[in-house]
Length: 260
Image 1 (cartoon, rainbow, N blue to C red):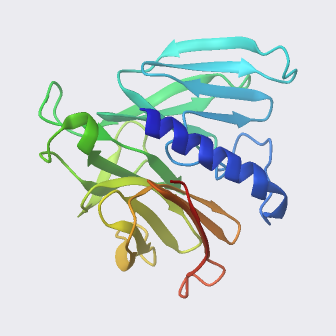
Image 2: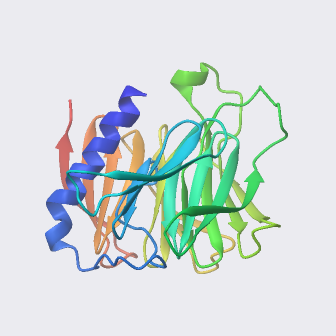
């Protein structure tokens, strides 16, 4: 949990430092896809509202006066909540066992629309961390057995693609086995997946329902990734890496900062 916090802080600081250089703008429109936080983020802002998840619930705050945040709503979601992602007016909330889909009403309060369980209820043989990113009607989710928390290598380590166009019937489209996938990020035509054992995977999204493996950057244990304009930021266990992705067919490492 300490590593998760530290890595989240690192991503947040990097976003702040590079915010003025990014060529994509942030809108207060509820329909904008969130691309300003890592896939493991537990908080995000939309307009003047701050959305914060803990292990079981989501809280909505009015932060129009940053010095005096006002709690607007708090509601239970489930158990072992791990991440929150904003996509075209939807909040996608990841837990150790499920993906929860929320819309936002006219006041910006989350309204539950549906959910998708990753495996059978009460199956205690698994231990997952499952960040989510999305584009259009598709959600990309990584499921992984955490080596430290679970203490074993028995479980599911994979990328899954879901069609979320029907909230009441989320459709599992495809699955790809990986070693120990963590955070992920979307480029223009690529999906970037961090892996604690292998490094950074690059999948081509020519067919977005069936991503195709294209490239692997090795030599580090990757945790989370963030795309800011033409920059891909990767947080690893011992370093912060930045890649130039202006040409996604020719990805270049432009800097590497050691954390230890």
